[in-house]
Length: 108
Image 1 (cartoon, rainbow, N blue to C red):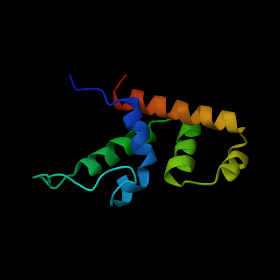
Image 2: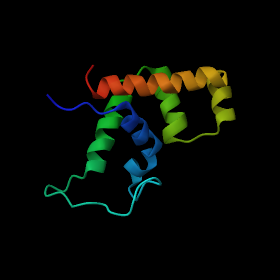
Image 3: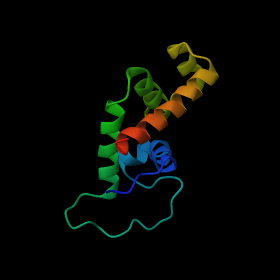
């Protein structure tokens, strides 16, 4: 059986979403990019594919908070108005989205 991806790792992927999509180096890592893979597929590319497929499986209201917070990085005030949510409701949905992504990725 494959090892589960920890929930803090999934949140880190979301925090570094721009890096996964566009490449480069995430803000919270060191300078060593590691060994190049033999097949040309990097861990970054595999993570991106896995995360995007999991996001597609989320209910619409959770997809929207993922896109607004981590993909598009929109200002909180705009997001709260657009989604018609309070700050507490918004952060609750963000946490719920991370938990649901954890469940989807780990097939729970």
